[in-house]
Image 1 (cartoon, one colour):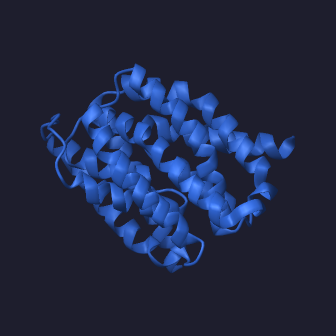
Image 2 (image 1 turned 90 degrees about the vertical axis):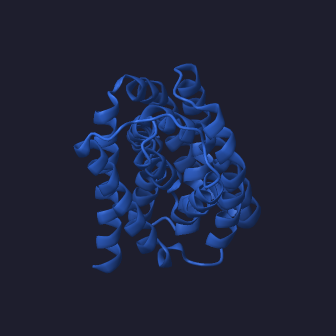
Length: 250
């Protein structure tokens, strides 16, 4: 029970950040699991199985609160699912640490770009989705599975950095993440098999804490002003990127 409660606390904090800012559930949870010695593939698999439940609840709440853009949601689902399934398969055969620094550099640039938009007070708009949503979804899904998290940091950061309404992009990315995590979880289960059963306490703890935090996170996302939300997203992604680069290079 103590073990489950510990992972529930991790899941609660991670979902609170993820639901409010559109990122960091996978990154936060996966980083913790790796730090206590869980193998990378098992850590990513456990996080994504738990996320099937947390993203499902979070997505519904964001939809009810008006945080979801249906067009953005539709454009992200299919490429995200394909990229996520491929990334889950690759992770079971190739270490994901090789590409993590490259992704972190990209995210660092996006985080700086977000803060520049806030400081320059550039116009926030609600423009229609464009064709580059397909490669964005593919890359986001692939890196999410490889790194145990990355769908939110890559997709949310890119969309918010483009000037779109932050709460709409955060809600849409959270809602689409449900479909991506389902695809990744199925791929992990098929490739890892019964060995995942040894980590059931992690899954139960993470999903319990995440479900409890989801309503509060969705409400916070809706109520925070756009400029403040963009600032928080920018700072968070810069800190996460610098942490990954530091751990990789030092």
